[in-house]
Length: 309
Image (cartoon, rainbow, N blue to C red; front, side, top):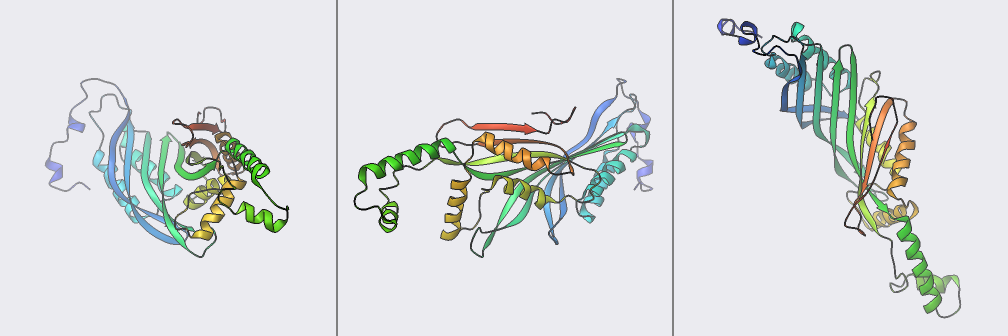
């Protein structure tokens, strides 16, 4: 809003032309501190975020844009309304039109963490996880593109290492087992620490995924996108665990062995089934305990002109 006092102040963006007549692809503000309202499973949270908002400057002679209009739009829209696809589209249209004839495209980037409750695997307990989120949205003339990025941490147990460990355990049994082979005696032998003389290596791993969301969906279901990845992998990291939960985690790791290639294929298969995901890119990194380097794989949908590997 321009006050009567403001109207008497000089505005060189209107009264002075640019010394060099050229358009600008993106101009605006970055690292704006902005609280975001999130609706997750009927609960509302305010979380801190870092916001970048820009427009293009198509008038080659204009000295600059009206940055305060961008900030005011961000403050008013994101403070008063829960984050949604419709809100993002409204913001892009608002900051574009706020510049008059100076702009016809706009850009938004949001970085924040979303807190989600996570139930224990077996016991009746739970804990908090915070997932990093980046939302990038861009309006190019009349088209709007919205991308959601997050990272899921999980455990990966090496299939090759598991096979080698099983062979050593079998050789240990053949060499050191004594007495009749009955179910009770064999169970007693297995429960001895000296019997299981090798275990496969496992490591904490990351799945960083970017999806292009359909503009037809009004809401961003943060939890469902993250759960889609966690369920496809089967071994997401846990919060509070008791012995029963830790044993179940060990069982999940033992029954869902995976190379980085396996993890990539699991996620590709999961994303291919989602009709509201127009494009995707997933990179998995296994931070190996065997090597000093990491194992990595990337999968994409393969949309022409879309996300690249």
